[in-house]
Length: 135
Image (spheres, rainbow, N blue to C red):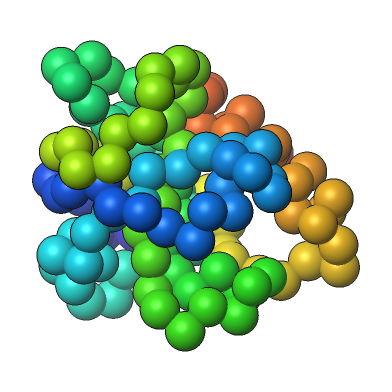
């Protein structure tokens, strides 16, 4: 994927409220300037990389797209900061570098299946790489 690594900076905004409550995976939803500024040709899907918030760096798992499980009509960029334990960060500036692609976005048969996929995405992101044939 020759569009990576890709770096961006933006403001954290309120999302749909599903990440932490429904999925057990709180996310930082990026503002429209980040979504609209993504490189043309960057596929929707789940990625890994690093993010910086309040001067501290975190590994991250990130989704770009319309979240087919929920049939969103609005494209979003949502980051899960691994090992972040602070309070909410709405209105703060976050910078990130997308390093690699994990998987395509898709709809799952159940919420539990989606949660399992998210847990695997976070494991990959924590490792910081996708090994051939292993996720």
